[in-house]
Length: 163
Image (cartoon, rainbow, N blue to C red; front, top):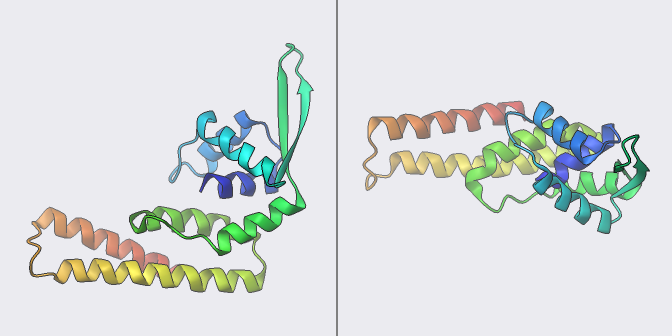
């Protein structure tokens, strides 16, 4: 997920690792918490793929600083990541869907239609799982548990309306 967010940011701004972390915390505050320990390895992976490049400078204080930018390969990779994102843990789908929806404005009109179809399908599957869980007679949910699942179900339904 961090690779998508980093490429999305670099698609808009050239930035240092510090600035990328700050932008993640500002733009994606409701979904992700950044750190150099998560951003730096993701940038290295993206660099190896040819998705990002950097310009190294020495600051006035004598420190080396890298300013990263996205490449054409990176722009294509960003679209591919959004279009083909497969959530390994279905219980993270709500947060993932929100981040992907936040970043999907980089897609073409045709890609956007494909993305929405794919995301709708995955959200529908999750919705069915939630509904089955609520109706399962072998699960004796207390009121708080039931309301929690119902709240999640409502969130899924609201996201589906957006699509």
